[in-house]
Length: 324
Image 1 (spheres, one colour):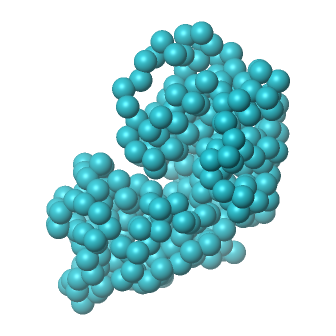
Image 2 (cartoon, one colour; image 1 turned 90 degrees about the horizontal axis):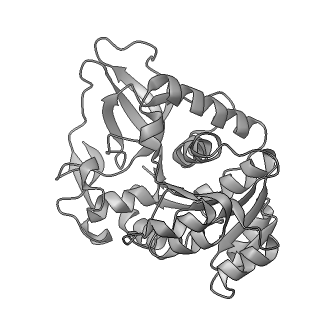
């Protein structure tokens, strides 16, 4: 029997219940993974609440990211062996457990020198940053970026990686403590949006030129503010909605600047094996070159509900892990 977090209805953190379940056996094309570290991401809260109900069948287990060791291989598995350290980020949901069977398509081998904890905490966020910086908008030297939630897991990675690419980074955060984290990650300017007018400060910093791209994981009314921060032909990339769903948008707001808006997801990019491998290689190379993944919170698997409460209340920074 294994510890497993199960949800039987959509709702708040209280629907995350610890249950004892049978140890699974890998089917053909699957492997059995013993989890050593499980990533905690905002997408997990969307699955739990029902906002992303298409990613889970009830009753079911949430969680999109984890690292572990392959304990057994089903028939027909190639490219992976018992004992391999692996990590995955993306569907199918089901990471909140001690062990699981899953297809090999989303698995990536963890390179030597990278711990299971760093792999689990960083893969989903790292792959997200990879497509945001290299695929949805190819950042080049001289670009000016606005990064919302700059002290969050993806935000801190975006700040560091964008500086490697030669960009100027403006970070938006909610507190002085988070401002310090964003600066330490390389943000050239940091705006505490609860104390300052975001749009006015961005235009002041850029000499009214605006930014080339705004990375918006906040949602709600933040997208309208992001558009207002753009320069000519600027690009808003909306990749999350931590503050709530995005209301209907008047696309006429884009016209005065010839601006554009994109709503990508990791699964659109990483759904093809060759693209996933290329993205992962790029991410692991950044880790080897010194990019930092800050694991600032850890929770026992049984405390998943508390972890969701902390995440949704904005009381976390950097990356968080659930430990089986």
